Every structure is written in structure tokens, then in C-alpha cells.
Length: 413
Image (cartoon, rainbow, N blue to C red; front, side):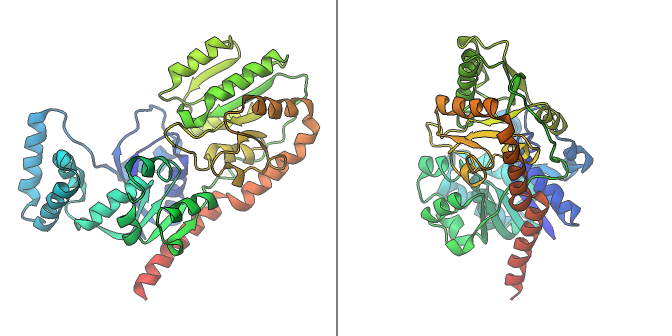
């Protein structure tokens, strides 16, 4: 199959779930072309991006010159080159522009440039609802062809419709061929927004169970408790609550070290929280690390902490991939009853859950691990079994291929 992936930024070190699908499809003999707005600004690049030469099959579609003169000359160049070879697409583009967003006409024109001449695929897979709208636009004007699949990840189901109206996806729901979501909770949310339940399918994110092999580890209560979080530093990740919980744990006499892997817009705020709680010697903001470094740091830790919360603007998590990677690795996880996380972590069985924004609840769960290391051993094995059974990347990629094939077979019928 020939498959197009429409994404926001690529490569993104925090979006290993998309990368896993791309490499899984390539391993199965399918061709994948990637279309992204721009490259991520993070300098750290996952090794698979290089080993699979994915930048060679990546096209950036939002390359608008900042200089006004170059921008207008570039737009004239696009028109001169393609107005006669594909006039219908150009005219449809401008009609759509007048109807939907008149202030961004040149951005729309530059945005279709990579798709002129027309691009034909078996499947056009859009990652995040907003990119589904872009895929719909490109199909509408006749420059991109293929079955339209959209995967929703969290913010695009919660915050985006609140900001843009509950009917923002109406035409996409009417036209799209398949909609994938990460959880049963997200499926219900999408149906409430107006999506036909027959075209919504739960498709879990997958973990490479070979790369993240189970590693037996033993924590003794007298040891230093090594806690790790891997997250983009945004509000919904709840890292500030994690820092406060670690501070409370230290005040209770626990010898603890907390490593936070990742970066983002709240880094400065979190540095202030660390200083206010006098935790500079115990809490470390480590920036982004590549996948091998993350795996090593997980191996060196005793607990994975994911204190996720709903943001004030309504942004929510889906199912954090790195949380599942930690479970696969045999690392006990402490998280929250946020969004679909309880569909991955069963409190007291495969991990520990506290209410959102509940610092004391997080402290109680962490303290239980400190005081009951022997009882945590069975939980680690149960967590690994859950990942192998329900969130194995190999199985999920096979399911994705079957979903694509089902659409193509239905079209032939």
C-alpha cells in the first residue's frame, strides 16, 4: 500500500507513537510518505528517524517565506507553474479560502504546493483531528487522493472543539472513512461530537515489547527512591504536582531523587516550583533525551510518575506512551485518574492512581511503594502482562494494516 501520513511537526522526539506506526508499516513492506508543517525545534532525534531514512520521505508543506517580497514572488511562482496544469485545484483553493479564512490566502496557497501535481495514495492517515481537517481540505480541492483516516489523541477531542465549536468536525465526520481513537472514553466523546459510531474504532498506542524488555528490579526501603517523569513540560502533564509530591515525600524523611526528562513552555515555572520547595538538590530538569537514553534512565529508576491533569483550557491526555513503556519495563507507575489512563492502569493491580491535582494522594501512593517493596513485585509482572496483551506495538501495527485493507476492500466491493 501507498500511505500518506499528515502530521504537525516531524520528527518530534515526544511523538514516538507516530514513529512506531511509520516504521511498523515500512517493516511490513508498505510505502509511507510523511507530510509535516515543519520540523520540530528539538535537536534530539530518535535513532529510527535516521536508520529508516525518514527525512528522505518527509515533505514540509508550510514553507512560507517570512519576507513579504519573497512571499508574494513565491506565490506568483506557484500560480505561474500550476495555474494551467491544475487550474481546478487552484480555483477550488481560492474559493475555499474566501469561504473559510480570507486572511490566510497565501498560507493556503503555499500549503498546497507540495501536492501539485496531485498525489494519489491508498490511504491518507491524518494524525490529530486538526490534521484530519487539513486532509479533508486537500481532498476537497482535488490534490490528495486516498481513503481518509484520522486518529484522535486527546486535545483534539476536548480542547479544540471547545475553542472552535462542537460542530468543528461535522464535514470531516460526514466525509472521512475511518476514525481511530485511543480509548473507549475517547470513542464516547467522539460519538457525542457527532461521529457515526460505525466508523469509530479504538486503536491503542503500541509499545515495542522487545525494545522495552521486562527488567527485574528490587527496591529496598532503605535505598534512595529514584523517581522519573518523561513528559513535555505543559500544563496537562501535571509536573508541578509531581514536584510538590516529591517535596512532601522528602519532608517525611524519604531519601528521594526525581528526574524529569523533557522540555516545554513551563520549564521556567517548574524551576520556580523547585526553588520554592527547596528541592534543587533532589529534582533535576534534564531536557529531552533520545529513546536509548530514556530506556537507560527508566532502568535506573524505581518509580515512574505521571501526574496528569486536565488543563484550564480543557486540554487532556490520551494514553501516554511512555507510561506504557515504563510498565513494560517492570517499573511501577504512579499516575492519576485522568482521561483514559485508568483504561491502562488498574489501581493496585498494574499500577497506582491518585485523583487529579491531589498532591497528598500522590504522596500516599509513593509512600506505599517505599513501605511495601515486596508487595509491589506482583504488580510489576501484572503490568507487563497487560502491555503484552493489549498494547503490544506488533499487534497494534498488524491491526492498523487490517483496518487499511478493510477500507480498500470495501471500496472495491
